[in-house]
Amino acid sequence: MALHTVFKSVFVRGFAPLMAASSLVLLASPALADWKKYESPRFELYSSGSDREAREMLIELEKFDYVLRLFMGQDVNSVPHRKLPIYLVSDSGLGTIWPGARDRIAGFYTSSDEDIFAVATRGENNHTLKHEYAHHFMMADLSYPYPSWFVEGFAEYYAPTEFRARDTRVGIPNQNRAMALSYLGWISMSELLSNRPMVKARNSDSYYPLAWLLTHWFMGDQTRRQQLAAYLQAIGSGTDSVTAFQNATGLTPTELRRTLRRYMNGRIPYVGLKTEYPVPSIEVTALPESADDLLLLGQRLKSGSTEENRQSTLEEIRRKAARYPDDILALLILAHAELHNARDPEKAAEVLDRLLALDPNHIEALQYMARAKMDLVDKAFEADDEATARRYRQEAQTALRTAYAADDANYATFLLMAENRRAEPNYPTANDLEILSLTYTLAPQLSEARFYYADALLRHERNAEAIAVIEPLVNNPHGENPAAKALLLQAKGLTEADAAAEEEALRQQAEVEEADSAEDGDPR
Image 1 (cartoon, rainbow, N blue to C red):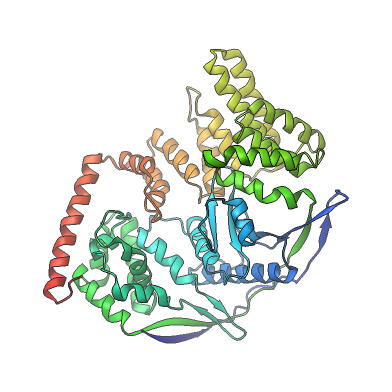
Image 2 (image 1 turned 90 degrees about the vertical axis):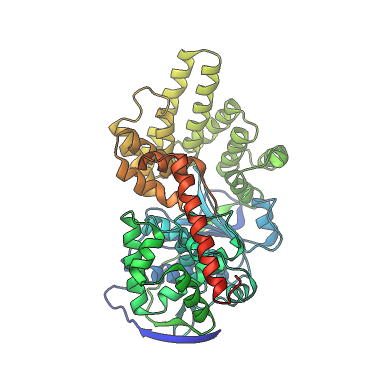
């Protein structure tokens, strides 16, 4: 595989670069932690390492976002509804957040009803972080029913982007992916092109390398980029993926297989980009002393705890939080642990009362208070105490109204509002739909936001809109979502039998393709 460079000169002058700025905001706590928050226009970076490393990472990520927007025809000056929090940690710090993490992973990305954040380890080249941010970006700014191979291929194409002194290199070929394709058996092109991941397909190990190669093939030529656009547009209109591909490129699956083999053994291009980047402003905030003990444990709670470590995490947080009896961060993480790990909403509410006496408008505290009250609603219903259940539901609504007044663009508040309403007999009302629409707009990366909104749209017989919201979730290459798939079938008026028939037809098509390839002397 040879590398081939295509340089483009793109000097963007239609914006005023942001002035470089840095300010240090000290909290009221008399003792400060090693941890600081570095905030740029699109990211929040938490780090206890060197100031230089944190700043360099933020600057690179801001440039990466710029490149994605530039290549995808987006407004390069646009900022997201919500900045992505990133935790820059050591290997041991990553283990604190994710005790079961495999050795030497470079980081991870997670989304939940409480937080959407990424974790990166120090000393890495940021490939994993950029890969995950590409997914995050695609779900937010390019939300569309892309086939799963392109979702993965998009991230793999842009993640190796290098920012050099004189140019930026985009789409640098991944030698490991190319090497894997030289010895792996290839999944059939029909199954590769299918809209959903085929986890049971023969030679599925080649799925991700081939997704990378096919994306490179499309992106490596102006004519093929136009074909890619036509192909994706046809899929969005409901055309079968294999049919859409043949119509756009003129290639059958067997011909595509031959084409990709020739392409892999030829000169794979990347783009050399010359541009000027705006200089991001970076604000630095020192965190309280309690962050050294508790910040990463707080993110562990948001990542989910196994039953095996749930109790030990609770005991560790209780022990460390006791060192900071009047510290807001310590109280917040302690309340969260009591709520989720101890499963004691009454104890959590007691801790949150202490916190809210110190800061009545603390957003996360108000959200956890609402969650605690909603858990108490469930307990009251279990005890057949409807009057108490109604009281707790009203208290949850009060907490959420206060949270909304303090921040009217927080997805977790809207999601809790919707969840607090789901048991009502008239759910979903037009107001519920509006709340879910806002949740989806603010956090399109969150599966719950998509599922609840699509479900509500379907209940109002707005099937086409429901399909547009839920299909990107079903096409996620990282795993099947049975509930989302069932909802999509319902929205399309299909049954499980219809879906099974489609998959069987795809398998038969794959067998024909493999037989054709064998006749060509390609046993794979």
